[in-house]
Amino acid sequence: MKISPLDIQQQQFRVKTFRGLDPEDVDAFLQSIAGEMEELIRENSQMKEDQSQHNREMLDMAEKERELRDTLLSAQRVIEEMKANARKEAELIISEAEIKGERIVADAERQLGELMSRIEEVRRQRIQFEMSFKGLLESFSRQLIGDELV
Image 1: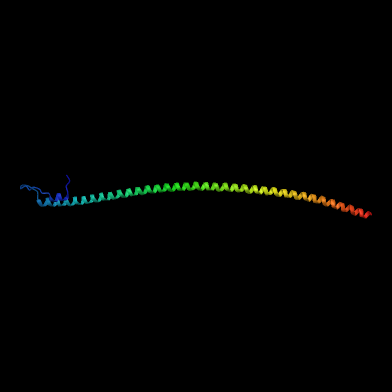
Image 2: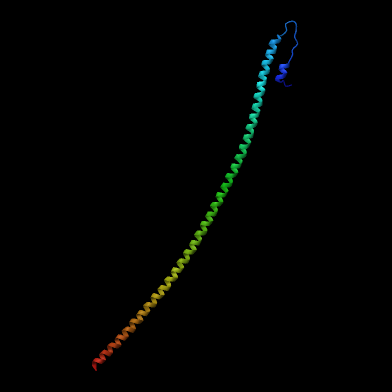
């Protein structure tokens, strides 16, 4: 059975005629106990309220921690995806650059071949020109020699 401060304050004792308790002392003591009990009940209520508040705060913090952990994991996944995409893009750029470089080298080799052919053609034409020119000079020289003899 729970006893409240009011129960203590209202408690009545039978008075004995012989060697009984002093009613004023008993009342004073009961009033003191009731006050103490009232204070303890208030403190207990306050502590229960504080504990409830702390429990709610702990639940809120646990929820926030879970949300932060989830957010962190999501951010890490996004970062990994971004890194993978960047690697793929870099590989694609490198591949395209290699293909472009190969084309440039092939074009340069083709142009070099064309230039070499032209140089050969010019050399051939020069040799042909020199032979024609020598032949012409020899012909003029013979004519000059023949004209001097006549």
